[in-house]
Image 1 (cartoon, one colour):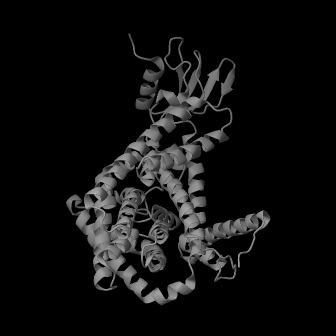
Image 2 (cartoon, helix red, strand yellow; image 1 turned 60 degrees about the vertical axis):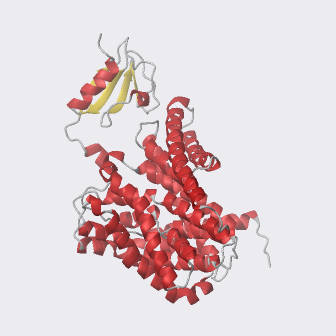
Image 3 (cartoon, one colour; image 1 turned 180 degrees about the vertical axis):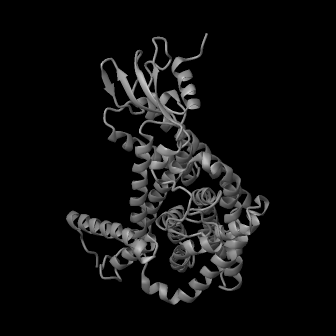
Length: 489
């Protein structure tokens, strides 16, 4: 029987679920359980077979929520990426997000075919769905546990987990089509795969440059509108790229990644805003997926799901990582740790809704199997990451936290406060600070204009006669003066 919900009931239920999720994220550290599992548990308890009694079995709505949530999560992950830090890990990360995903899917497909009795295509579909690691799951666990890693391990994990979703999406969509249309030529699928990748990369880059250009030149009267503007950039990047035949997920990640390399107005506050949006999207996605699953359908699959999870974690992922990273010689300890931190999150569950909606045979079994595998992965791997990092001696407790805002201010102890004059013929006059492309570590902290003083933002437009108080070291100060003074005749 369908129950009609009033607007007040819907809002009250949503508020209660969000509040419980926030409290759960706080309690996860004390309980030693990743917050993502608690979000799923809250959704399942609120569902039709839990005390909440909310009946929800609409896979289409769940998929739509999941797609929108993943777009914002990937954008936020790209925007938070510090390019100068991840650059040394670029090629290992790209290799893991492509070849590593494919090898993981193939190895698990072999197990599913030989042991579970699935057809080769069904086995490959299962492997593709669970082949990617989840950026939200990986970094929620690393940050909540305070794990600091040696060398390039953290940038490598960040790049891989943020960029391997598109590969898993392309494999899942292609295999779903093959199962529904067995006569589809492989050459056509290969062309579609290339189109999705190329258009996704190009769309992400173009929308990133467009977003930076608009943000720096639109000069909005209300600071809050810049947040609205970036939301539009994310939605436009995903939807327009997908409409043109590219990978929307790849586009949103590349948009955030490219934007992170440029200075734009309110960059720091916008990054924090999208970090909050990403958390909201994670909670919404996990709650929805928790509501969608029926726990009574999971119990009969427990044995098979645990065996599948064991093969994925202990066999498929390690083999894929060691083979993929062999040319980069990171060492067996680093490879083993990367293998163990391959957490599965909401992405595989969202991907499992695609064959479900397409009507693929056994899709409901695949969905429940994937759900169980994800919970097992996050529970087992997520709770043991600190222990494994110490066991393999890849942790570095002395490394500064990248999330500590004080690091930005104390990174250069040689910086001093200096005054720089904007002369009458300065090319900086009439331009906003953000458009000057000052050195990254040069900070304009105050503008003295006439008898008054202005606390600047990136959108502050300089005028001839302004005296800028610049915090910088000697090298960055010299570069700042050259930009302000302009080329000498």
